[in-house]
Length: 356
Ligand code: DOR
Ligand code: ZN
Image (tube, rainbow, N blue to C red):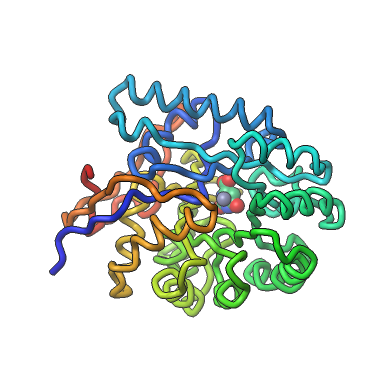
């Protein structure tokens, strides 16, 4: 039985780091696991300009320094690189895009359909309004990252991703064929099939939780808010299609945790927030999913090679290793003066990360 797994250092292509004390609470977890991460811009207020992205990057780097000074991470982890993104709004113009690209700090622009998820109120209300921005992105090669769910209340929550393909993705690809697009955190067979045949300028991230769980996890023995995220977990056939895409689907599929921390009391609530906190044990969760599929040998491409290739960035130097050692995910962790419950808290994992 394989007892050690060594990979080139991986990256997280979809991460929520939050801000202030929450940022300080979670930064070490991602820095220990990943060399770089695409940092989502859905703060309050959202990161809509280059200035805001630069300032946010400065706060992330400060939090990393503090974590290093506190002995939470070593020098290698302290070199974690936040790859900044802008939040697309109805008012984002071509000039905003050109400036962002020229800075070298902004690596993508995130499309949240208005109202689709946490802090998405300032999102795009009509794709026609963002045509100049999309044209500029297409011309300078700045990828569009898409939260792919329609917000139409008439559409069943479980169908919102597949309806998005017809209503938004197909017209978007037709109108902007040279735009790089990442269909973020895909959750359905339809999205996996769509991306697989959409050509090399269309990619997808897949979370560990969508590879490991189907929607039964939300209701096992009672409502389990720590398994609630958006897009919501789907039925087993979809989970299987995602596993197939991640393990054997090729270079268009790569790792994006969508680790989305919310304090415990906001998850265990009458109207609980969407988001699973997976940053501390992300790679171990992915290893579990890949091992269950008999595909540990394809984890490196998914975690460390496909993402940089799509983004036009070099792969990381160095390696990380996982060792086969059973360990228990903590019941809770400190977060912003309160606590947070990591996904699958109290459960056991077979793999554990060890230093390079
Ligand atoms: O579950 C989610 N949480 N989905 C998102 O799209 C946003 C995220 C968050 O920021 O909490
Ligand atoms: Zn997200």
